[in-house]
Amino acid sequence: MSFWKTLAAGAAAVTLTMGAGAALAADTTLKIAFLGSEDDEDFDGSLVFKNYVEATSNGALAVDIFPNGRFCSNADECSEALLDGRLDIYITTNGGLAGWYPPAQFLDLPYLFPNDRVAECVFDGPLTAKIREAVLEDVGAARLMAISNTGGWRNIATTSKQVKSPEDVEGLKLRTIGADIQIELVKALGGSPTPIAWPEVYTSLGTGVVEGTKNGITDIVNMKFQDHLKYISLDGHAYMGALWWMNEDVFQGLPDDQKRIVYDGFQELKMTARVLPKRKAVDAFQAFVDAGGTIYTPTAEQKAAFQAAAKPVWDWYEENFGREWIDAAQGAVSACEASLEAEFEAASQ
Image 1 (cartoon, rainbow, N blue to C red):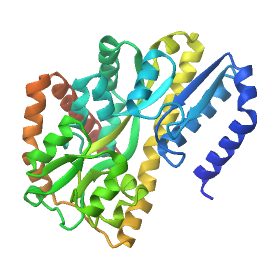
Image 2 (cartoon, rainbow, N blue to C red):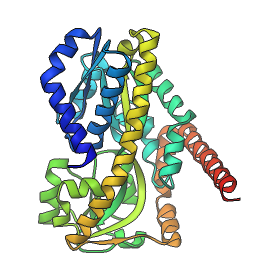
Image 3 (cartoon, rainbow, N blue to C red):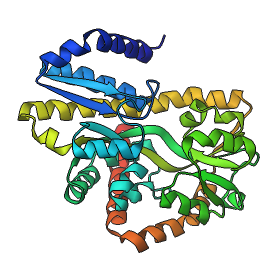
């Protein structure tokens, strides 16, 4: 059994045998809910958060974790519970945040982030504070605590055709989520966007309703989509951010020392949930290949062609939401690229 599964099993046992007593002894019990399973990095991150917060507060704070939709059964229900205070902590995707705050769709602008290190640097910097302040001002009930990752990167995966260039997407029926910006990307590449609910994707791929999808490799393998998908192009058009929110009234109701413990706990959660998708991707890619799949990495020239083809998506965003968030995001990316380059130069001399 792996370290993480051992940790999960142990924590689950502790929760079952001691959770009620711990909750009674604690001054405050924080409830975390999400739709993913115990095999998801969100669960592992939550376990680390629980362990840190309960230990560091010496039992004054307790944490209850509700995976698998046990507290709320869909994203809208969970969001409502967070915003009205029935739930203390909830995670959204980039698209999920757009449901509360539509300008947040800038987080899914295609090819905004070049790699993990830049994305992580950006989400540890002023841009996250700007998102936090904007949502607090506009929505008011939720505080952004940290941004991790939930599944790596979105790539183009297909059933019968290897995609190496934007021209290869022409006419393909690709499954998307319902978010406007994801639909606009498929249109810009010449494909036919087809929003399909997650539980229906496997059957839709098998019956030809769609000829591909835009997902991370771990999600593909977890759902056994490799039964139908035979090609992946690692174009990396979107970083699958995971935004961790806490009810604002609950956070502000904590004493200052407990606020700090909770904040630091989220930073521990963030580091855990960022690392695990990278490790899981190693096994997932191998599983995809073992199932007969082919993985292709676009050349620099091909990647540039994808970026050029996606420009209409950026134009669409600007027409609908202006340039404020585009400029903020591009500035943050440039600053992080410069910082990481300087770090390399210092380390390589």
